[in-house]
Length: 313
Image (tube, rainbow, N blue to C red):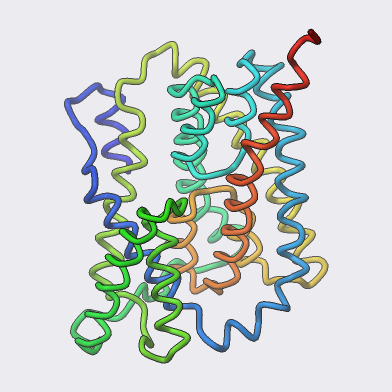
C-alpha cells in the first residue's frame, strides 16, 4: 500500500491489477463465510443490542459529516453527502456521481479514509488495547484437506460471479461469504482459506488502496485529500464514542467493539480481525449492517434532499 501510494504521488506510470484484485477479495469473503458456524448462529441474538447501535452511528455520521464537507470545505450538496457516508468506496462514488457529485473528489476522500484507518488502526489496537497482531491468519495449504480447498475455490468463484449476475453489492466478498457460510453451516468446511491465499489477498488489497491516488495534483492534496484527512479525525471521535458505549454496556469486548465501529473498508477490517484473533463474526456482522444501511438508505436520503432543495413551481 505504501509503495503504491508513493509511486502514485510521484506520478509513476503504474496501474491497478484489474480483475485480479477483485478476485483476491473473494479470499476474504471465503474467510468470513468459514467463520459463520453453528456456534456463531447461536450467538447472533447476543449481538442484537450492539447491532442496533449501528443505525444511530450512521445517523450521527450524517448529521456531523454532511455539514462538515458542505460548510467547512465548500463541497456541493451531493458530494458532501456521499463523502460523509461510510459505505463502500466504489458504491459511494457511483451513487454520488449519479446524484451529480464530483467523482474524483469522492474517490480521493474515501480512499484517504480507508488509507488512514488501515494505517492507524493497528497502532490503536496495540497501544490502547494491548492487542497482538500475531494471530495465525490461516493454516498452510498443506494442512488443509484437498476437498476443502476445492470447495473453497468453488465457493469463491460461484459466489463472486453469481453475485455479480444477480446485482449483489460487494459481490466479490459477499457472494463467496454466502456460499461458504452455507458450506460451513452444513459441516463441509472446517477451516479458513490457507495462509498463502490470505497473504496474497492482503497484497492486492494494499496495492488497490495506494493506486487510488494516481494522478493526484497539488491542488487536490491541499483541498480534497486534506478534507479527507480532517474527516477521519471526526470519524475517529464518533467511532471511539460508540466503542466506549458498547464496552461500557458490556455488549462486546474492547477489540471487537473497536473493529466493529471503525469506519474502514470491509475487506481491511476483516484482515485486522483475523490477525488480532478477534471474533470475526461479531466484527463482520456490524460492518455488513453498516454497509447495507448506507447503500440502501443513501440514495433514498439523497433523493429527499434533492426534492427539498428544489424551488417550488
